[in-house]
Image 1 (cartoon, rainbow, N blue to C red):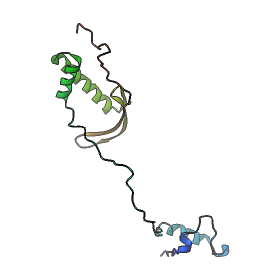
Image 2: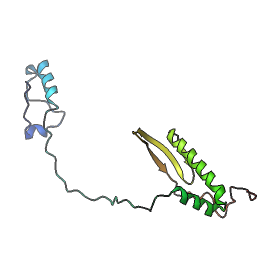
Image 3: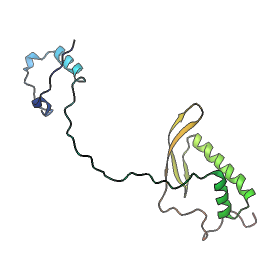
Length: 156
């Protein structure tokens, strides 16, 4: 049976480097071993209660609904000027390649989208959960700008 030592106000505020009042001759190996065992049982000193302060507003701003594949294809057609029947297979192939790269745990560096860094992965019964961070540059400009030339040749 282990005994618990009382913590008084004088022992609770004692600095770590001060010596004990118990003489050295009274301390034996078994006493030191018992005190090490009871160290985890001791109650924590009373915490000083402080008034919580609001540091900053952490509200989440929702930008809108999710971007679906159909809407993505429409935006690609609108921005690039390519016919929908040519844009759809290209967008679907790009989504497949990006999905494969993410499932392999590879990082992506696609500006102006940003740099995607794989953090962790969890396998569940019917899905794989991947947690990743995306870092976007504040100075990133759209890849296909009106001032720049198009990626596709004029004949295409």
